Length: 299
Length: 283
Image 1 (tube, one colour):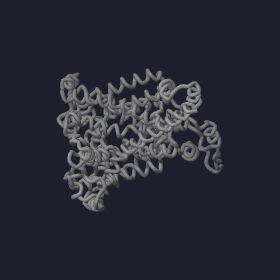
Image 2 (cartoon, rainbow over the protein chains, first blue to last red; image 1 turned 180 degrees about the vertical axis):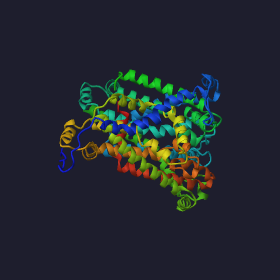
Image 3 (cartoon, chains in turn brown, blue; image 1 turned 90 degrees about the vertical axis):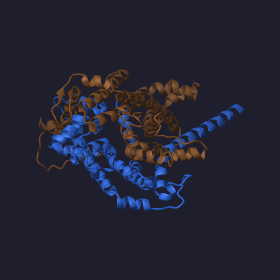
Image 4 (tube, rainbow over the protein chains, first blue to last red; image 1 turned 120 degrees about the vertical axis):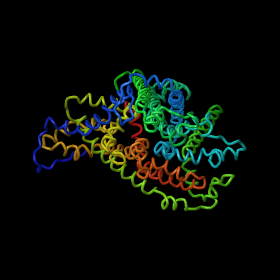
């Protein structure tokens, strides 16, 4: 490595003890104003009645009692739990299977596929949601129903049927994230020493046994990280819902993220919105604790 | 002999099946984009003709002309470009100096600071959303791009990633420069910066991409739809051209919005892949 030679003709600037403090000032200000203060403020306003303009009125746990007897919130909680704990494991497992496939392909071919796999993750969800909503899910002129009709099947009300709409939202999320997961697992697979696999083959282990007995145990940290990250993301799904259904039909696709948004910015009930946000955060917090326990605490 | 042959054929077949599955999946991930491109070249009559045609029978660029002439698309595009570039520059500068302080200098509370950043990475956006909005209101930044750029120019993720990179630089490098009398700013920008260039590229691409796609925050802090950046503008475009016959115009809008991202992914593929792997496997 080439070491930069420092020109001798600048003034001597000794290292001062306060320099690190100067350097962290921007980040520190940001962390205090935009993260630390908001966390405590959210906790505080969840115990108040507040419309942003007048002074918050302290009402104790009333907001929490109200949200847990609110069928809309309970629906959004149920939907978010489905999106987080059923959909995300499916996504990450599919990603893992695809990574096993990708890992066996030639590099150039693998990179082309990988490029196509991660595109939906890179393209803004709002843009993708328009393509899906307008181009794919439209009952009359959409691609999916056109496809079904050419196969002689009936069209489906993808976003109009309360029993299907949540599935349709999930499909978009699945489409957007599977490539991301396949990429993570691919990196994990490539970090496994090739000798281990070869030794297993010499011992006569079949492909499935190699996956179950060598690859999965070695990738346990990757699995844990990917599943927790995905679950945390799944709990916060918003853009798909906003762009495709606005929580409808009825409340069938309401999610926690959408519920918080709606309570705060449409109904201006910041106290209840904060209580909902805290319930969401509590689930995330528990997940993070589980992750630390599984991964053995210190990172 | 025969057994070996059968085994070989079976392995070959398995490989073929695996390739087919992978290719089918790639079709699944790319078909929406292809469909958007094809639809954007269809005439209004063809869009609403049943049975639906997959390939346009008459190619037209009218949708693009209408998009660029009739709508605010170009404005939204330029707004997004401005916000994304400004945010990226800000993130690079703040990440450089903060990561430097956190990896190459000693100070009180440093470890608490680092720990705080790590926790922040796992916290949901909704925990902080409402007070952040309140702060923006109090600052009088509603309908002002400062509301989008300023809160985004410090990125815990970028600081963390850059710090990981800087830890691999030997301290001797920096000590030698200090002995030679180099100021800390000189060290950060002239010595450390060239050494962490790959990480800078990763966080730049990453910041640009996420800024380009940011949706919820602009939706909240901008009341005036004519100020919307691209992602948020998609919603306006979609409802303004709600009539089925105008689907081509809406699709032209999506094509011009995802095209820059496709180009960035093509050009920076290596770095984007590294960025994704590093974030996910950061622990």
